[in-house]
Length: 320
Image 1: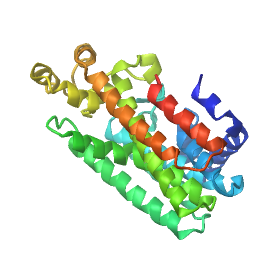
Image 2 (image 1 turned 180 degrees about the horizontal axis):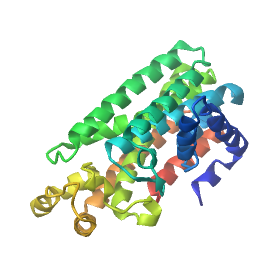
Image 3 (image 1 turned 90 degrees about the horizontal axis):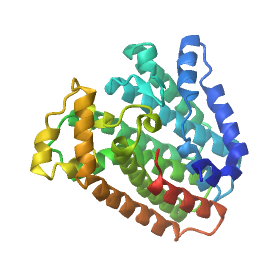
Image 4 (image 1 turned 180 degrees about the vertical axis):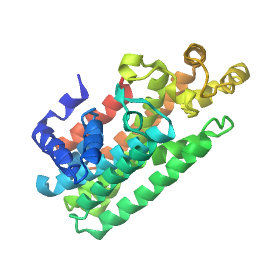
């Protein structure tokens, strides 16, 4: 079953969010608008808006209010992707040219800033100061995460703790914040929105670990780029850390550099896959997933709770 089937009852609200996304990036600059739409129309799972909506269902759900939070969180995610592609010098995202590739680095940075500013404009509709405090702290951590990711490129001696902190900032925090802000916008009790935050954090950690596994096990068609792309860009992920526990493999992996041929990176990717590192990484992902499911059991019973459980389980088994 496809992920979208799990939350198909949200389709009408998600269509509204898609329309609002397109409306929001309209602007006085046709070029900025064109670049933003280029990224939007590349698609995406829209998993952050889904978490916002489902979390909102634990309170006083009003799509007119909730949609602004959902769109704002997706725009922040989009802006981070634009900036990521500049940092990683990536030419392809979701099978399409990146903004940086289609235009240039400077234009991509301003496009990311534009999308980011639009998200803050939308969030200004939410009057609860707590929502803004939470979002501000999340954005600060996201920025620190971007800087740390640059510093960590090709740093093969980094620890498991370094990696986990990086993916917390890169992925888990924004998913956790999506859950919490959706709930806060719907006026839920503090105890509930804090639990939803923790659920989102654990799911986000599992989600990113699976992403990092798929970079080795996925096909070019599934990934929209050749396998091993993260390693080629110098991103030391969990499968790599586990593979480097074998000294023979470590001596191969530390030779990776950005000019390495696709044939060579494919050979090293195969070595990582054969090492048992993938299974170990799956085990860590599953631990986070189980923590997410445990937290979920403490929340009130409703349709959203079941859907969040189904999404979490899907994430643990996804193939793309």
